[in-house]
Image (cartoon, rainbow, N blue to C red):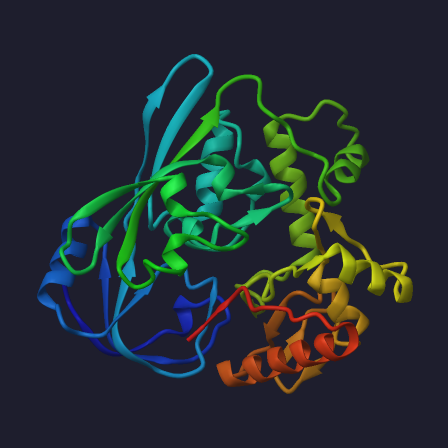
Amino acid sequence: MEIHKNQQLKAYNTFGISALAKEYISVTTIEELAEALRENAGKKLFILGGGSNMLLTQDVDALVIHVNLTGIEVVWQDDAKVHVKAMAGEVWHNFVQHCIGQNYGGIENLSLIPGKVGTAPIQNIGAYGTEIKDVMVSCEAMEIATQTVRTFTNAECEFGYRESVFKNELKGRYIITSVTFGLTKTNHKINTSYGDIAAELTKNGISVPTIKDVGLAISTIRESKLPNPQELGNSGSFFKNPVITIEQFEKLYLLHPQMPHYTLDDTYIKVPAGWLIEQCGFKGKRFGDAGVHEKQALVLVNYGNATGQDILDLAKNVQKAVLENFGIAIEAEVNVV
C-alpha cells in the first residue's frame, strides 16, 4: 500500500471542492485496512467513503483512508426472506440495483441516493418513506484503536432521524466495513404513499407496481429534481427537514396556511426545509459559483469553482433567513470539514 502525499481530493467529494489531503491511502481489503490503521497508529485520521455527505472547507491535515472494500453476498435465506451482506465500498445505488435485479425487496425506495454502503448506517439515510433502520439487520465495524471487528445489531446502532451511534458517542472510533440487510423475496411491501411515486406510476400506466417499477419511478423523480453530482457539484439534501412541536406549527400555520407538513406523532410535526428555503427567496439564486438549485431549494450546488467556504457561507445565510422568517432553526445534514 502506497501513501500519497498532498493528494487532491476534488474527484473524491461530490461537491467537487478542491482540497488537499496531507496523506492519502486507498484500502480494498479488511487486511489492508487493519494494516493501515496499525502502521499509522497515533496519526490523525480522516475516513473517506463516497464523499457524498461532506463539505470540505479546508485542506485535510490528516491521513485520509479511503475505504474501497467491495463485494456482495447472500449470508442467509429461506423461501420468503434473504439477508444480503454488502461491503462498505460498494456504490449504494449499484447495490440497490443489484437487489432489485435479484427481486430482493425493501430498499427500492432508496434508489439513486449518492454515496456508498458503508456510510449509509452512519447517516441513517432515508427517502420516500424508507430509512436504513427499516431494513438493516447488522453491520460490521473495525475499531480503529485495536483493529478488531465488531458486529453491531440494528438496535445497537441507536438510529434516529439522520442519526446513529456512529455520529455520536462512537464517532471517530469505528470504521464500518460491511452492512447486512434483511430483504424480502416474496410478498414485497410496496410503498408508494410518499411524494410523487403514485403519480409517476399512474403516468406510466402502472396500477400494480413491482419493486422494479417503484425503483425506476423514484430514480426518474430524483433525476427530474436533483442535479447529477458528475454534472453539477452537490451533496444532495444539504439540510435536515426540521421537526417542530404541534404548538409551534399551529402558530405558523395561521400565518402560512399553505405550509406543507407531515405529522409524526401527537407532539411533533416535520416541515420540509426546501419549502422554508424557497419561501425565503433562495431557490435558484446564485452567489458567485455557489448557489441554491433551481428545482430543489434543499440542494446547494457548486457551479464550478466555489470553495467549501463559499458553500458554507451560503448555508449560514440560508439558515439565518429561515430562522428570522419562521423561527425555525434548520440543521445541516452534510458534515462540514
